[in-house]
Image (cartoon, rainbow, N blue to C red; front, side, top):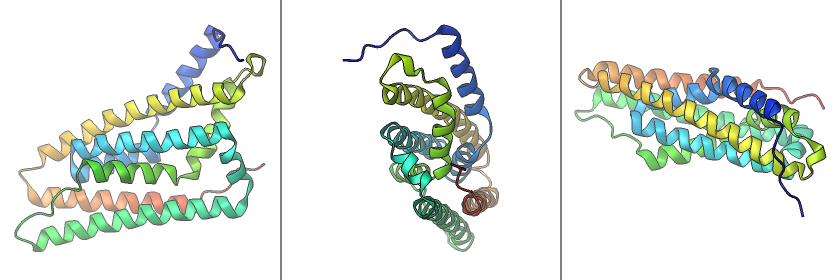
Length: 217
């Protein structure tokens, strides 16, 4: 039976510093949450953050079990995953743009998605992102100590810590984006433009995902 040992303090501190730096570095996850916050407000942004956190957890567990390595090793599976993720992001972006256009023509604004739907979409967006799987398989193993045994458990623990830091950073972005949206609430035209811009950002993220290359084995 494996017994956890106290990790090397300097190595663990290095991991936390690197994970925190990566968490606050603008990337697809932060841009997605920002776009969702600008489109639907603070609650939707936070729900999206929690959803992407759960989607990241899926990749951590898959990586610990070796599933991600199998997907990344297969050109066909990698392409299928990235195209599905790209299509989903583009679809969400188009929906946001169309909703903004409907608002311009309708007497009443289109209701917000709601936190539950924003959470579900966040899970799907992150779970279908092969870049997240590649990130965990490239980053986390650098801090795993094989001499402690149970490499999969170490991978899972460190990966979940990284997900937690990413989610906290995304929540901060969601709060900031929600504040901007709230400040614009008295200007319906500006809100529509924010929603359309957020849709364009999601489409751009989706198109960018199409050009992601499978990591060299």
